[in-house]
Length: 150
Image 1: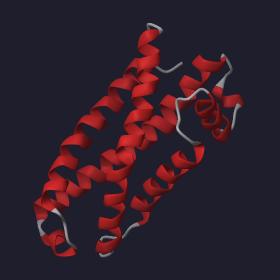
Image 2 (image 1 turned 90 degrees about the vertical axis):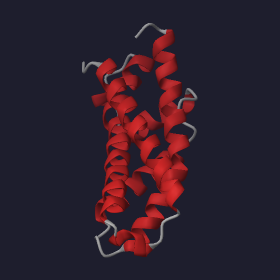
Image 3 (image 1 turned 180 degrees about the horizontal axis):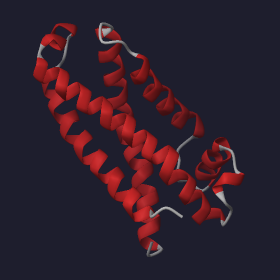
């Protein structure tokens, strides 16, 4: 089994960096013209990279291992939707449907071209709105693991 503590540390680092980038982005009130500013491009790229990494770390690393802890079943024998449904059933995931929206948003970032500035800004705004949901999901899982001494 992968070391769940290392995964938790990775996720915490993504959250820490995202919190910093989000604070800076909220201060800027961005418009498409701002995407000509190199420093803003770097800030947006950092935000997008960390958002993608956070979503992936939760969905691809933490959720499967946490599923095993909750159920005692090997995650490779379950579909991803089964894992999400289990996390929802136990109250760690607000809703499977909401998590799928987060996954969809992550995929949008991957497919947005540099010249699609309006789409990029809209996706960033939507991602900022989803961060509390993502973080709350993580904190519920982390708190449970801490209480179990894991």
